[in-house]
Image (cartoon, rainbow, N blue to C red; front, top):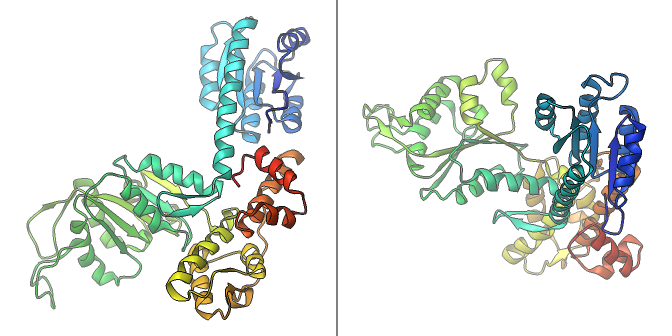
Length: 453
């Protein structure tokens, strides 16, 4: 990570030592690192984390070809996807430039090198990288009520929220993939709320309704269609006219009914059971499941054509254990809510409860957390919910491995600061004491990592 007080790091990957010296002299405003082959380039990326790389595609042991250069480009972007890589191409080698950009390169320049032209491209790349890095810092530090209903401070969930914002207004089917209790219905409602559709949001849990009744629930039926049908009934699809139909646990729909659902998605027309009149329905379909639908499709338990109709946009929802810092944040929210509703004597979480919430793995995700807090608020004797009230056991959650020690330290620092701020309800003095540092040091770290106090 490059801080404002540090020089901007530029990596020049070039096997011509004379050109290396020329470029290093030309970029006196940057910290220029030079590498002559793929191994040295990758070592430099790990050690210095350059924001911008200029890359000659003709590298040893094949300086007349491009295979080694493209392999280097792929490895740089795998290690550090936000790096702006500018590739060098020979005269007329536009196909190489096109391929490089399609792989993720930022831009290209032609050889022989025009220093002024390349300098402009490099400066523009640094400017764009700085803007993107600032956005990432702001997002990673912002605890927010996103989409009107999702409470999070985790970058993992912020990314999901951004995806939902983008797809909400597009008239496409959305599939939400995630374990039970991760908030799939809340996200489906957020898509509907931001879609501009005027009709209702109609939800149906396909796993909760017996197979012989599910068709009637979805498509409705006419009077006399079967024994017990004493009057006509409008189905869920029809009720969602002009709005959104949410099919929760769509993987539990039986194959026989999948055919009829596919026909509706293709033609946007239904017929009630026992009816003969086609009914046109304009509704957006959002579905959710915790099952592996691709595996179910492969072994014939779910229709492939239906899967692709439902999965025009796929959104993967992280588990609570993968949402760094969110467990304590949500626990505080639920204590406040259930305290007002069920036991006004309860006002907060005790220190041992915060430790327990933070350490537990939450296999049941947000739903389990909500239920435990609700029960604990009811049972609590004092002003605070304790670890005993929550009946929790500890379970460690591992942090992803960074590519080097500096990146690993930043990951650890961010996590520790978020947890300390969450535990002390954003009290600077309390968080600094918990972290074992001074208040000025904590302020410096908050500023450095662009975390909100």
